[in-house]
Amino acid sequence: MYRMIAYRGFEIHVELSQSSADLYDVKFQIKGGDNLRVVGPRGSKISLYNGPYTRRWAYLIAEAAGRAAIDVLLGVTVADGDPIE
Image (cartoon, rainbow, N blue to C red; front, top):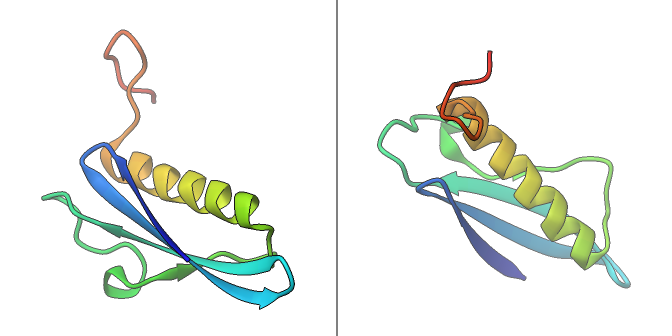
Protein backbone atom coordinates (compact mmCIF):
# COMPACT_ATOMS: atom_id res chain seq x y z
CA MET A 1 0.00 0.00 0.00
CA TYR A 2 1.18 3.47 -0.78
CA ARG A 3 0.38 7.03 0.22
CA MET A 4 1.91 10.43 -0.54
CA ILE A 5 1.63 13.33 1.91
CA ALA A 6 2.55 16.91 0.95
CA TYR A 7 4.31 18.95 3.65
CA ARG A 8 6.20 22.27 3.47
CA GLY A 9 6.95 21.90 -0.25
CA PHE A 10 8.12 18.28 0.05
CA GLU A 11 6.47 14.93 -0.52
CA ILE A 12 6.52 12.16 2.08
CA HIS A 13 6.10 8.84 0.29
CA VAL A 14 4.90 6.04 2.60
CA GLU A 15 5.00 2.39 1.59
CA LEU A 16 3.50 -0.45 3.63
CA SER A 17 4.29 -4.12 3.19
CA GLN A 18 2.21 -6.73 4.95
CA SER A 19 4.20 -8.75 7.46
CA SER A 20 1.33 -10.77 8.97
CA ALA A 21 -2.44 -10.62 9.25
CA ASP A 22 -3.45 -6.95 9.69
CA LEU A 23 0.15 -5.88 10.49
CA TYR A 24 2.54 -3.95 8.26
CA ASP A 25 6.17 -2.95 8.01
CA VAL A 26 6.58 0.66 6.91
CA LYS A 27 9.14 2.67 4.93
CA PHE A 28 9.09 6.33 4.01
CA GLN A 29 11.00 8.52 1.59
CA ILE A 30 11.18 12.30 1.30
CA LYS A 31 11.21 13.83 -2.17
CA GLY A 32 11.22 17.37 -3.50
CA GLY A 33 12.55 20.67 -2.27
CA ASP A 34 15.50 22.57 -3.65
CA ASN A 35 17.71 22.41 -0.58
CA LEU A 36 17.20 18.73 0.24
CA ARG A 37 20.31 16.79 -0.65
CA VAL A 38 20.23 13.58 1.38
CA VAL A 39 17.78 12.07 3.82
CA GLY A 40 19.02 8.60 4.58
CA PRO A 41 21.51 6.98 2.24
CA ARG A 42 21.18 9.06 -0.94
CA GLY A 43 17.52 9.83 -0.32
CA SER A 44 16.53 6.18 -0.22
CA LYS A 45 13.61 4.66 1.67
CA ILE A 46 13.93 4.66 5.45
CA SER A 47 12.52 1.74 7.44
CA LEU A 48 10.73 2.44 10.70
CA TYR A 49 11.59 0.11 13.52
CA ASN A 50 9.67 -1.38 16.47
CA GLY A 51 6.99 -2.68 14.12
CA PRO A 52 5.03 -4.24 12.66
CA TYR A 53 2.17 -1.79 13.02
CA THR A 54 -1.51 -1.72 12.20
CA ARG A 55 -2.30 0.12 8.97
CA ARG A 56 -3.49 3.32 10.66
CA TRP A 57 -0.49 3.46 13.03
CA ALA A 58 1.95 2.75 10.20
CA TYR A 59 0.72 5.71 8.15
CA LEU A 60 0.58 7.98 11.20
CA ILE A 61 4.09 7.13 12.41
CA ALA A 62 5.61 7.43 8.93
CA GLU A 63 3.97 10.82 8.40
CA ALA A 64 5.20 12.06 11.80
CA ALA A 65 8.74 10.82 11.09
CA GLY A 66 8.74 12.46 7.65
CA ARG A 67 7.45 15.75 9.02
CA ALA A 68 10.06 15.71 11.79
CA ALA A 69 12.85 15.09 9.29
CA ILE A 70 11.67 17.96 7.09
CA ASP A 71 11.35 20.27 10.10
CA VAL A 72 14.92 19.46 11.12
CA LEU A 73 16.18 20.21 7.61
CA LEU A 74 14.28 23.47 7.21
CA GLY A 75 13.99 24.62 10.80
CA VAL A 76 10.74 25.03 12.68
CA THR A 77 9.09 28.42 13.08
CA VAL A 78 6.52 29.40 15.69
CA ALA A 79 3.32 31.33 15.01
CA ASP A 80 4.94 34.79 15.23
CA GLY A 81 7.58 33.84 12.66
CA ASP A 82 10.58 33.61 15.00
CA PRO A 83 12.61 30.40 14.70
CA ILE A 84 12.74 28.06 17.67
CA GLU A 85 16.24 27.81 19.11
